[in-house]
Image (cartoon, rainbow, N blue to C red; front, top):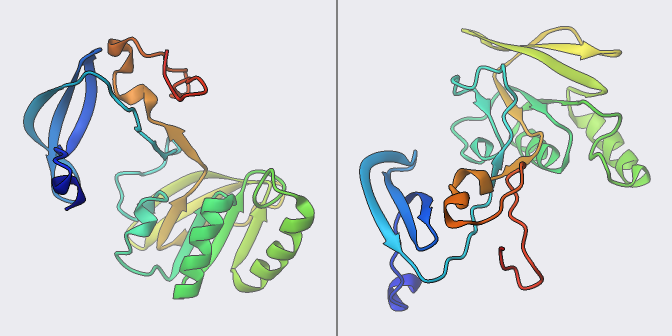
Length: 210
């Protein structure tokens, strides 16, 4: 409604630069953002790039199984899993773990490093971990999820590490190991815009690209 009031045209779809004055949009429809096959070209004098980021997906996991979730999927509550494995003990992983724990899931958290919320002050993390340890089925530090296999009864995770637990089967697995920038996915180089190998777009103090 606000966009219409201000005569802003909204186009829903996947955009990529054709050159320094045109963006090609592959239009989408529905909540799954399926491509419709329709394309349109939008001409501009100036463009604001705000492509955001997306969840990092570990290779080798059965991502075609709907029981595998990233942090975006976890917000779309199809059901409350009885047993949930959270891969990644950072802020996003713990945030979602707390939500599902409150909703009744039996939560297990696995973190590759030696503390929850890596990078945060250990003295602050310690009382949080003590509190969570009383609520969760398990918190495993310095442990890696080596493999996840999809079966009829759930997703079976195999772990590696000094104190790795035995393989367990879960109703759902949430992978929350961080996010990656989307700058490399919009064909910015066609507009002459510099993008780093990690998908970040360098800007100056006024947020201008090169």
